[in-house]
Amino acid sequence: MCGIIGCVNDEAVAPILLQGLKRVEYRGYDSAGVATVSESVIRVTKAAGRIDDIERKYGLSTLTGTTGIAHTRWATHGGVTDRRERVAIVHNGIIENYLELKKQLRAKGHIFKSETDSEVIAHLIEAEYRQAKDPVKATILAAKKLKGQYAFAALFQDAPELITGARKDAPLLIGVGDTKNFIASDVLAFIEHTDRTIFLDNQEVVKVTNRSVEIFDMNGRPVRRKPTQVAWELADLSKMDYAHYTLKEIHEQPKTVVSAMMQNEEKLAEFVEKIRGARSVFVTAAGTSYHAGLLLKYRLERDAAIRCEVTLAGEFREHSEFVDGGSVVIALSQSGETADLLEAIREAKKKGAKILSLVNAAGSTLARESDLTLLLNCGPEVGVAATKSFTAQVVVANLIVDNLVGSGNGGGEEVARMVEEALSSEPTVKEIARMYRERSDFYFIGRGYHYPVALEGALKMKELSYIHAEGMAASELKHGTLALIEEGTPVVVINPRGETHADTLSNAEELKARGARVIGISDEPSEVYTHFIKIPRAKESLTPVLEAIPLQLMAYWTAVEKRNDPDYPRNLAKSVTVK
Ligand code: AGP
Image 1 (tube, rainbow, N blue to C red):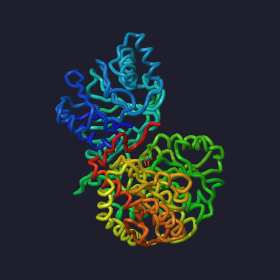
Image 2: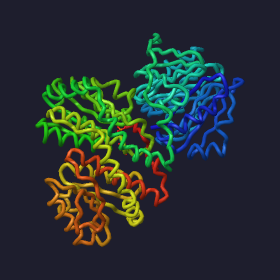
Image 3: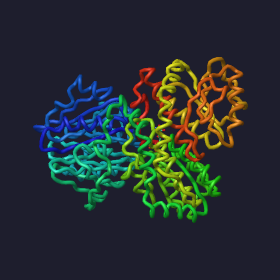
């Protein structure tokens, strides 16, 4: 779960690598390293910590050379940016058979400097290169020996004009420039320089120079592929006047819910027809996307009378008994690179199911491996905590069900106005975040359609504030969790008017009776609430979008109060590309 980038340029490459690293730092920020080759010497600078600190301390951007590779890392095994005398590599993924390969290489006299699985790749390529004398051949031969997941780029001491790379089950793409070309895990790494992108397929190898890009399959046969233009622009990547990407992305939602509604009519109709024609429907996703999946299930079953199994992506295999050729599996993902989810859809495909997906990253593996994809259109999401992508997923899910039942979905302007109104709760939410920032536990409850939103509220609070938070169905309180409630315990009650309002309010009274501080999120105030966060009155299918806004703001401002970095929460990464 790392970010890798490589570039072959006409001029000094290190400043460009550093810039690109910063753009993909959300993929992992435990440590970073840069390697360049010049005058037949590979130079490496690497260190633990955030890129800006490493740059200040070691001057990553001062490395000489016009060809280089770099890496920002989320720790799985050992150190970063492994090298041998003649080869350096950066790697994203996990090599499952690295111990076995290490043993074989040691027997041939190789000496290892680190505990990383990645270092094995550098040794393998160097060993093959000594025989093959050809960087591409050496890369192919080495890649063929690797088991697990990988996307790597390799630098050669005596071939400074090129970089090679290979991928299997981890994203790797090429940025095609005029006087420089890139290899990277993510389009954001080079979007500053070019939007012409080639997405490598699984088990492909690439050779990049400053004027050419050549792709090969694992038998060394050339593969022809045209670059595609990615829709994201540099402007999308600025924080504007916001202190953090997360806050900017929360405030972008009046716009992004409208762009999410702008779907290609034909594609949407085809998507709907596939669901209507399916013998069985499954939904799968991870994290925040799973919460949006739960909301889709609710509406499919309750409004469209279509039975639907929703399963966590990482548990899909255990629940795929009934997936077959008559099934449709709907996969939801912001990044489209979540390893558990890719494994789930490949499992489903093996059983003959059709894969429909809701994705934000257009060229991602999930989008390319799906039979049909609807894009979230919410622009790049840099903050590790999913915010605008969640509300976009809910809006697109609503579009699908509204089309299934033939009901209109109301104008974007009205939705944007209501999201703007929900954002106006910020001063109240900020004050609540300040008041409860020292608490060690936070609970979020809701019933029916609001239960998945309670799960989402808890996830946001956990990942941004590092406070233990639990989201649960309000009906479950009396079956155990009520024992944890004591004087001062903050409980967020998600409770707009509707079918479940009265029952949830009585749960809130039970909580208050035991000393809880009840934070009510609703379109209707109540004396039961210690604190009231007002959201606009809306039709039920839209309420999760409006409820999510104050929940995102609460987690964000609690993180700020606690001096956490909301954009790069500890131990996490934006795209979970390892299982
Ligand atoms: C949510 O804030 C987290 N970043 C995480 O749970 C995320 O939703 C999950 O990893 C799924 O990611 P995806 O939507 O890119 O597949």
